[in-house]
Amino acid sequence: MRVEARVVAGISGAGLTDLLFSPPGTHAIVLISDSLMRWYADDRGARSFWADGRRGGDLAELGDSPRFYTHLAAAFEQYCHTFVGADDMPLDTLAAFVDDSLARVESA
Image (tube, rainbow, N blue to C red; front, side):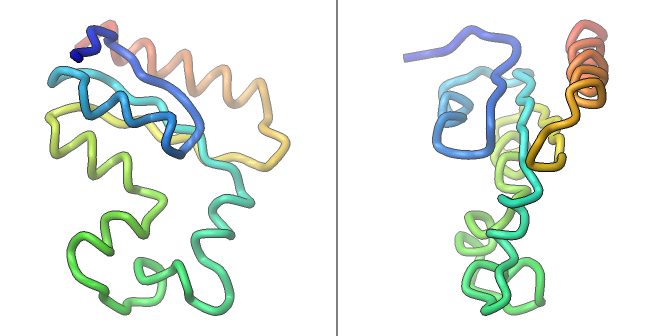
């Protein structure tokens, strides 16, 4: 299966796996909430190798990061636009971010 979309957008998670089937040049728009960032960097350090300097190996570092889709997109010659916002996403700010990201898609 090959996805022909120019933009794949969604909340950070498994729903963005279509990037694997998207051609080079595809743009990903990834939304991450404040609580998800805190989940990644929990107090016990269970999921925060990227935050505290410990290393678990290349694959662990890739999968243990809120920047996962940035790395994935780069590996497939794609572009990643990531928005980190409060749990109650500020819609005006989010809309401006999406507009800016789509303008970059059009200019590419």
